[in-house]
Structures are given as C-alpha cells and as structure tokens.
Image (cartoon, rainbow, N blue to C red; front, side, top):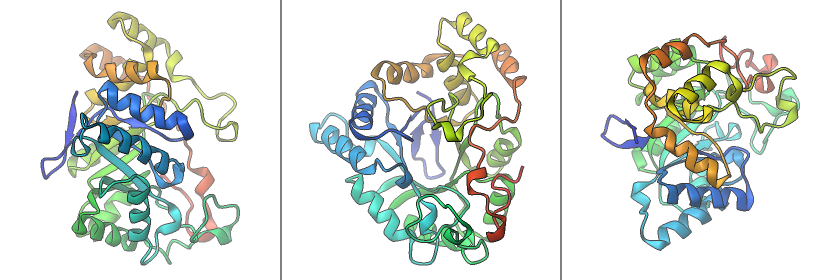
Length: 315
C-alpha cells in the first residue's frame, strides 16, 4: 500500500475508508470489515452523525488485540457551527470522546463557512455567522492549539481553494498539512494539486467514484457515471480490474490519498485491492484527457452572499 508522509515522518495509507452517508450497523460493520481487510485509514466527520458507532467498531477491533490503535490513521472534521472563539476544542474533544479515542490522527476544518452554534444545515441567512465575524484564521488558530496539545496529531482543511489556502498560509503559524477535496477524472484539480505539492500540503480525494448514493436533492438530472466512462472501462479491461479500481488507483498514482465509501464487504475488499494495480503512462495520459471540471458536490448549498459566502470554491 502506498502511503503519504507527513513532515514529522508519520504515514497515512493512500486508500482509506470513507464513511459519509453511512450509519448504524452498516457503518459499524463496514469499519470492522475494512480493518480486517487491511485498511489502516478511516475517515469520518462530526456532520456525518456516525462517530459514536464508528467508535464502537474501533473499540471492539482494538480490544481483540490484533490491530493496534497506533496502527490506524483516523480523521474527523470540525463542523461549520463551531468556528468561533472557544468552540473548536470542545468540538474536537466531543469527536474524540464519541470515537472512544485519546487523540485524532488528523482533524480538518470541514468547510470554509461558519454557521451559528447548533445549526446543522442552514435554511436562511440568519443561520450563518458572517465571514468577517468568523475569519478562518481565528478558527485555524484554535486548530493550531489542538495540534500543540496533542488532541490532533495533524491538522488541515477540506474544500479549500488555492486562493483560500494562500490566504490562510500567509497568516498561520502552522501550515495546513492536508486539503481534502472532491477529485476524480472529471475534476482533476491540477492547479490546486500543483499548488499543494509546492507547499508540501498533502491531498485527499473524496467522491472518487462519483458519490452516486447522494440524495436526489443533491444530484443533477444528467450527471455522469464515472464507472461507465468508456476510457476507464477500457483501461480496466486491459488490466483485468474493475472500473472502480482504476478510478481509485489513479489517485495513488498522482500521489494523493482517496477515501472511497462502501458498506459492502465485497466492494470494501475490491477497493482496497486497487492498491496493487499499476496504471502505465499511457493510461495516465488517457485519463488526463478526461477532465471536465465537473463537480458532483457543487458547494452551492452553502453559498450565502449576504453573509460573505459567495463562491465556496472560487471557481
């Protein structure tokens, strides 16, 4: 398994288990099956509402004694309603408690948007905290404290554009160590990837398979199916692999991590086996030509010009 290396030498598996939209016994079993299959990278978030059940799965596996806590890289994320002064550490401590851990390996600011305390999903402008009242650097200073105290070994961001990263880096004492964003052959993020590489910021790709199980309200009527791209299917056939394995391996070949989500034991194992695939230069060239700058997760649902949130991705 390829790994991503942090500046202090810590390593994270390039293929992890994503858990967005997975709840109850489905996610509990998925986490356990993933760990038994060889995964050592689990990704969750406060907003997913599944930290407690994932915590149960982790505790049960660690209690068996074969897989150790220190061998598993666990990420969670700060929700948008805890960006203001004094809110980050309590939110982080709550995630750690729910996950039945003593620390997180990685803690991310989930979105560059601030909500009022207790708001899960905003329905009106008054649910937001204005951008100038909750500047990201103030949230980030609290993230830096979390790293200094050891509550989070590494800190980073999610859904941040190059522009937002540049601004944060210019003001921060500790640079973000990770940026987790949507990436796949139809959204290759070359400019952002080049920038992050130049700044030694690691990247993780979410929705690598297109997030087809999103709610209907989040989908476009004519959105593409990444698993049905002819060129991807041809590459898969060439290597005796699945289209999903090609999509996953493409990220590891680019030097990023990726977190495909599945609750199926078979798919969890198949996704992990993508690590052994070796796409060649011709394959990578073919995939490079597929970019459409197409987003499945548009971010439009968090845009609120009245509060200073006009373009989440600065597209």
